[in-house]
Length: 192
Image (cartoon, rainbow, N blue to C red):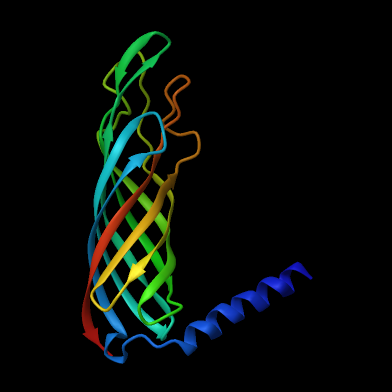
């Protein structure tokens, strides 16, 4: 019964999206933007990034595409077992599928990017030899977002996370590649 309700809800969202029209000359677009946020963990303080994605409007209210970019996470100092360590900066390069739902031609939208986030940068988590571990190479990438859109711009709030499991942990400090923040992107129409 629960699966039936979820299926009906999904069909309703897609059908509702089909009834509201995006601009017909904007079926295919390139989105280029920037984002920034505060860290959700102890080894980083904040991040800034560049987003690049391609989106095709499958229906006027539902878009699919691919997304990539670069997010730079700034390492911060931490105290581990009464020893001060400096966590290294690192970057995340996502390769993800893009999903967007547009209930109206202009206004509120929601979506997510799902894929793999490659973690790049210094091979070590910290610069302290006594408290160090190898940086993870990457993991499952998730970036849900909610925002406002018009023909040219998207303004959004997002949660970004690369799930690395227990890789990169240093003593009691868990490795974290996650943030909560805001962003803006510009739509470049590529035609129908």
